[in-house]
Image (cartoon, rainbow, N blue to C red; front, top):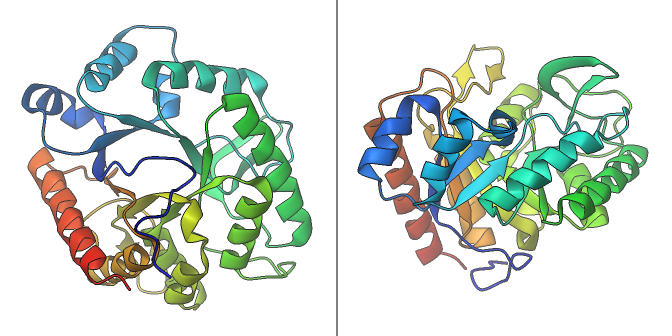
Length: 284
């Protein structure tokens, strides 16, 4: 079923956006390219003042800004860090971001942070654990929380269900939103041998408030989600499938390694706009 007219938790479709990254700051501020929105890494702006927040304010003067995080560790067993959540909430009041996102993963234990997005076992107990923590985070931040599927390079023998069934169960029990990373679906499908189309088809469309598109690095025996290079054709095909099923949803081009000139990034964003419009015109 398509959902072009369905409300997504009352959240807006911002069109096509790009990540706000340091090499592009001045050119973006000076030329104001025609993109729908900018995404920031929240942790880069959790400071009391100075240049980072001054640059953020320059971005906010001309674009909607969405906050995306990398260190929530929603699946971890260490108690939630309420000082961190308080800082996130303060930043949200500055950005007016209509939702905030982070990854469906764990990043470490106790004082050890691996600085990686580690996959979870797909079990009923973990669904309950993550959903309970997600509800607390969402209530604390006072905006919808969107959880993002991560790329993975290992699986657990304890898993009881597919990744997409796990993802759906978590967001439904937590009553939160979905950030669907189409590239991550493709990467994991190649690493683990599952059908990426089945993943896209299983996600609750009405909860998807954002999509990520990115490049990756193929090492032959495995693929790493490096956010480098352009989006490849099979990932564009998955994006078309997702849009036909989900409808118009805010879409971001991620490019975080070997960052190209801004013109190259904007060309990729323009391709996303064209693909999205074509997919919407063929939606069933």
